[in-house]
Length: 253
Image (tube, rainbow, N blue to C red; front, side):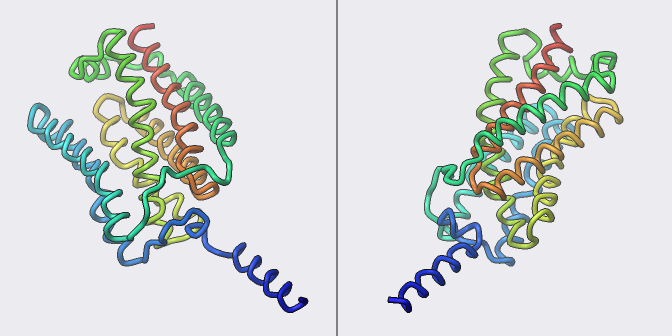
């Protein structure tokens, strides 16, 4: 009896020391495959933004941007199922974290609003922003709100799926802990820098990019801590509400 109890205790200790992937039935990417996956995915968003906003604005650029979006949506799932041999999952929050995600979202959203006013966004030259918004057909209230809802609830979910569930896990196979958090946040930030630089001045571009990086790091940490995309998604939604709230004030306030 004592021997069996010792075996159970030893088994319990072993389970406690297993890697995070075993806790959510995820296969752990190996280093070579993780590097290949990142090389096939990480540059694609920046390529799509550059083509759509810088090199070929218009039908060609929009088509390439759309293909890039489709690649972002399809590639992680295909890689996970076909290469990593993983099983489909909706990333259930088995370890909690929804409350932490909500609190972090309030903090990040508050920092966005406070930072925008602290650095004088209300006094910025709005002409480039209005031009870009008009190009997208979002220069009236209803289309703006519809697009804001889509970005806030749908695009944010896609970004959590791509950058936290997939990119962070690949980074984690190469480098551990906070290094993986920083790396995945940097990959997440790259295409945002290109996009915001088209309608913000250099100082505001730096500030906005720093905010995106901080948000990406917070959401990667939430995934690292709770092994689910949903805490980060809740935080991301609240942050996007703040962003589009500032945009509404600048455009329609």
